[in-house]
Length: 452
Ligand SMILES: Nc1ncnc2c1ncn2[C@@H]1O[C@H](COP(=O)(O)OP(=O)(O)OP(=O)(O)O)[C@@H](O)[C@H]1O
Ligand SMILES: [Mg+2]
Image (cartoon, rainbow, N blue to C red; front, top):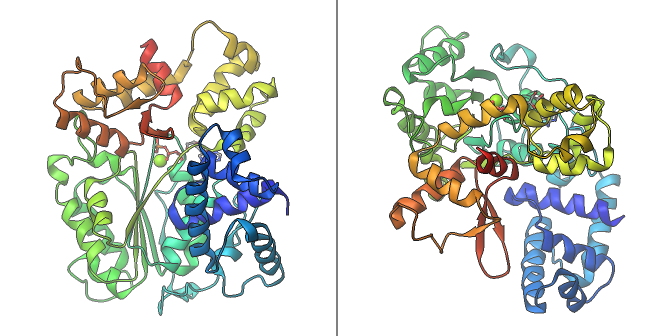
């Protein structure tokens, strides 16, 4: 097993368990162990203390031991991963279902369709063709999606193995929420009797959504049940609500419902708290407030913040025929690996810079082309307090929220509320150093705000 393979594989495992990727120190530790280095060498390479490396390593071994169900430590890491990988290849489909679902190095989502009934999604999960009902008329179609293998593994684990009842996929516009959910539905459709996809841009009021759902879910029964939750209990249903942010008020803190949509909160709570074998998938720019509360109460709800496509975004640039491949990494990083933003700017580069990424990046000021109005519209959605905080953050590399500037006209509480709200939008990222927790704005948003 090569080191890169081991890193990808471990990253997939950890992501499936925690929803978080390996951070840079964890990766350095794995690389160091692979090369038989001592902790002190790793600390030197990483410019931090040996104690910090030792502590991070010990947490990592504990996490890996939990995931793999056996004792993992520095001394046996390599042999353990190699043995499991070998048995995974030669015993595909045995009882380690998570492992057998992970494909180590494919860039394009590689799963076969989920034919097998989920262990915990029973007894309705072995669904015959005649029992399957789908309304995907509002679900857009995509050709291929790249590099969402780890996210799909996690979502399948949550839905098929852990019977999570509400999942929110949230993140910046264009980051690929709808494309990911569409691919997921493709792969798990055989596990549900009813699948319905609705876009909140078309149906806002809960009452009309409920009528719509009941109409669809009752197509095979003579008597209609009073509420969608009754159907969720008696059948395995997957409901996808896309563009959920349409239900929230603009220019207020994230996750505040429009007056006509306030009853959604109660609807979500009911779905999370009453027993059933169905799943509601929300796709949104903003994480709904009650989802955070329900997660805090350990209800079967989870959320996944969707981030950069990483190096795989290079496929987008290849498809557009751009040149100067050595500069692509810089472009992808600048655009936060956002596939939609990269598609837009790639067209501009093709048109104005003859496809040369180098010339585009060397241009004296940042030119965003058709993306600019989209960023402005998104910025205008923020509340006044969020605008103050994000402008402050945009003017530095990363900031410790403990040190609120004295001239920021916000009380301490309003300041933290604004920070929390920006986190719910995926608009500020955590960037730790050894001692404190720092927050930073994604590079492109930062550059846009600075030049605005
Ligand atoms: N994993 C991916 N690989 C390649 N292209 C992708 C991927 N994900 C998304 N895209 C492309 O990026 C564009 C935006 O994707 P998508 O519509 O899924 O974003 P979104 O997060 O749902 O955006 P919005 O919040 O505005 O609804 C689409 O053109 C899609 O084809
Ligand atoms: Mg979308």
